[in-house]
Length: 230
Image (cartoon, rainbow, N blue to C red; front, top):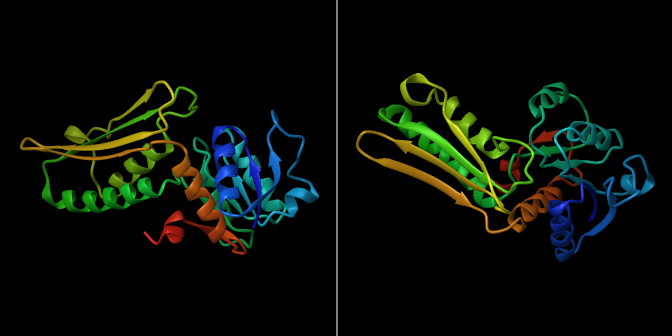
């Protein structure tokens, strides 16, 4: 499979490495610091799928440009209004898109368990949730997209924080931490904790490449859950 990369920071470089390990070819790299390639080019249009990990202020334009070139795109950039673009694209015929706040297989299992636990605790009563996320100092958005997804899943079940207040989300930035997410449910009697800790960026990169493999040749907006069958 031929892959175009939009963004070639640490994540982009890891994605390139994982893609090549899996027998794919990187045919185009879009990055203002490392490449002169452009989205409007034959090299980009030759790609079967583009994988976009760039910046919040550039992500929407990048996704739109890729779709305009007829290239399906897997996007992992957080901190921009994905929902607005999804609503705009709804019902339209366009190249395939997958966006996820996190491509780690483990984190997506965490999402599934978080949803299930929220459903159980909605009926049990007495538990108040809070979320903590820790990332490296280079991460631009806070809270992380993953923390926002975890919170949205809980809110969907009508749950909130202590005494009806908003669910608290603590964001910590330190060192080169790849990513830690923890959901804590506390009652007067006990505490339940869900936690995922990434060892490196490779798990995120693998998930993005798996998503690209699945998306090849597809059209429309898709969810990562379809790829992972979760």
